[in-house]
Amino acid sequence: MFKTFMGPVEDEAAVTYLRPETAQGIFVNFDNVLQSMRLKLPFGVAQIGKSFRNEITPGNFIFRTREFEQMEIEYFVNPNDTIGGRPADEAWHERWIEDRLAWYRRYGLRPENLRLREHEKDELAHYAKRTADIEYHFPIGWSELEGIANRTDYDLKQHAEWSGKSLTYFDEERKTHVVPYVIEPSAGADRSLLAFLVDAYREEEVRGEKRVVLRLHRELAPTKIAVLPLLKKRAEIVETAHAIRGRLARRWVTVYDDTAAIGRLYRRQDEVGTPYSVTVDVQTVGDPARAEVGDQKVTIRDRDSMEQIRVPIDTLDSVLGRLFEGDPWEGVAAGSARAEGSG
Image (cartoon, rainbow, N blue to C red):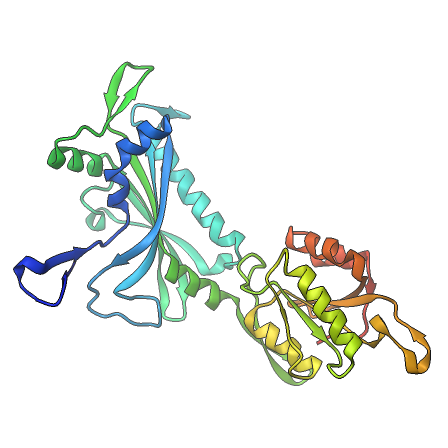
């Protein structure tokens, strides 16, 4: 544990220790959760919180730090149960490994950058029956992203022994008390963030110029939509753009930007990973000087393909809703008019 001192005086009376993991708080509260929630095995308790480790060599940006955000699940199973002829703890361990790998893939990490590494017997923690690490191919090489361990009943037995309080589950079917086994997926939020950023970063050449784009999954992108006026000197364009931004902001994180030419604005949004941009132009509002009536349509630009479609303002919410719900761009674009140009 991370040793430090509480208060201004550094003496033995002020010594305190910062937790190296969030898990132990869950074990201490096992019986409280079991009784208050009236749960039956299997069940899990998840927690996200600060952990501290006195790392000798912190570095590589946020990959290894002494203070970090940890995400852990303690999944309690009945060791007397079987699933498909296998002990329940082994079956659930396998399932959690598969589910955690699928989670990283779902949110955009490329399969070729992920691998599973089993701990050899000589490196297993003394309490573990089996441990597998999900590793990611960082720029610094293959390194651990998350560990999924079968911790057996070690933790609950230790807390019960030293606290004098029983931490068991009554198996109604077998009419006996059992100490549950624990499957523990444990991941660092900071390290996951680093992996998603690294994997999403691209440098491309577009018409002879470098384009930097952050291909974040739409659910991870901090900004979902950018509303951009083609001409900031046209009051009706700016007014319409602000109205659209206000409406979209009720459902998604939406920004307005008019501080550069439209091409530069697109590139800015590419760099921060904004999935879609909505552009209001002269065609949208019309041009009274030329007696042209606006078509009340806007352009939606897709970050990854740079393709653009034109849709009526009153259908904008539904079109974007389909995209954020997972409909592919190609399918949504097929039902809309293509806009001229890209970039």
